Length: 157
Length: 157
DNA sequence: CGGATATCAGTGTAACTGAAATAA
DNA sequence: CTTATTTCAGTTGCACTGATATCC
Image 1 (tube, rainbow over the protein chains, first blue to last red):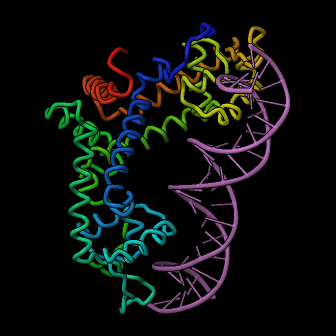
Image 2: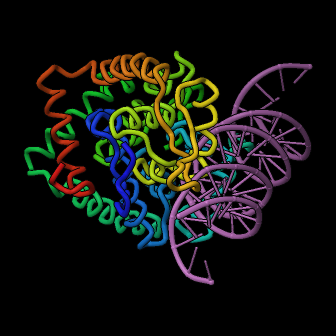
């Protein structure tokens, strides 16, 4: 069917797509990505910065290669991120004297403080994302997502 | 904490990330994207091809500009996709004689048949994605996703 | 003329690849 | 000699921008 004259065509994906779980999930992920990116930007941070700081806080200091493997961030991308975090005083990098190939990356006090601020930003973004859902629905949503991901992580997490 | 010697570090994102709804949603979306891409590839198609064919089947023939607006696909990307679909005989493009700026794109019989095959591939990918969930859980998951997206589409859909 | 369409070249970005220098 | 780590240059895929010829 050709659009009637004068009819402005707007964003309007077909029903078949809008009902596909894979499509809806991608749309929600896009929404989440926008919200998270915007919330971190308020503190001048981007996603990988938050990811790295969180890993250092929870899993401890590590070499760049290990950080990359834990978070599945490419070594080249880490190489772009870490100097920025170091310049802002959020992490300290030092040669590992037991294995002088390695740069051991550790969180600083300033990094810990920055992470606390980012944590609050991230939580606010989650609230905004889940705003249409009740508390019970939010828990249910999280449970279903976790169930879908258990295959990747293994059930023992 | 430095990794103990000999310990191989594997993919293991921190708990804080793994519990974030935004993060879990993105992971599930990545999983869905892999499954959908692989299922379409079995018939030599990619995502935008399926999207365009679906729109033509459900919403009817349209100009390239209108297809782009309906699906929010960039005009340049459409320009890459449509010649491929035309070459394979899945769509027909013809100058609109009432507005000779427009290329009216329409599904062919071969296109309709190809779409039927792709539809089955897509449904199989959904099944694979949702495999860990029961029937009731799948409906619940779809309901929650739709609720999160109602803000974008408006509630009247 | 202003505005829309289809086309095509080019830009910006992010994920990744290859390779060098250093060290184990 | 082989392997691992960090660094850095380059590639690829993708979304998007700018410009042009055509048409309303």
